[in-house]
Image 1 (cartoon, rainbow, N blue to C red):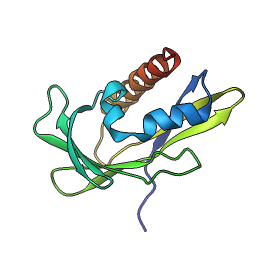
Image 2 (cartoon, helix red, strand yellow):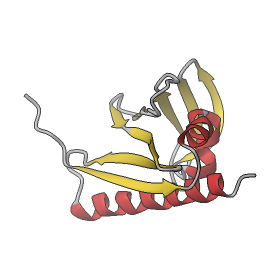
Image 3 (tube, one colour):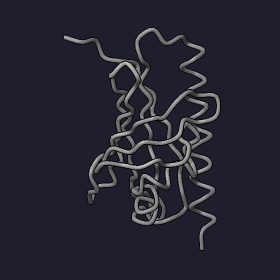
Image 4 (cartoon, rainbow, N blue to C red):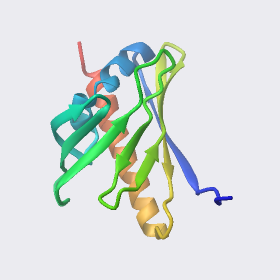
Length: 138
């Protein structure tokens, strides 16, 4: 039995209907607009997309996205060069007239406290950018 990973849920409230936010975030090509870990889309094969690496990273990033659904689930898997995957649960949840976007950050084995805290801050910045993008749209 594998030990559970430490997890931190990072959330932002967006003052837009959840369906609008989901429709925007559903398109993998839109991820680089707010997810700073991904560069320009390079192509895809079904639900598996390749992106330019972000500034300071090497090579491309491959991400496998969940299928479109009616529940606001945007889970995806980042494929690492060693063949392993990092699971990223991401949800858009109705909350009043707006919604909450919740990202679950898992601590990977060997990750230091400082790196885990830095990753959490990175996710908070990305979700803040998503909020600004979606709330700023006409």
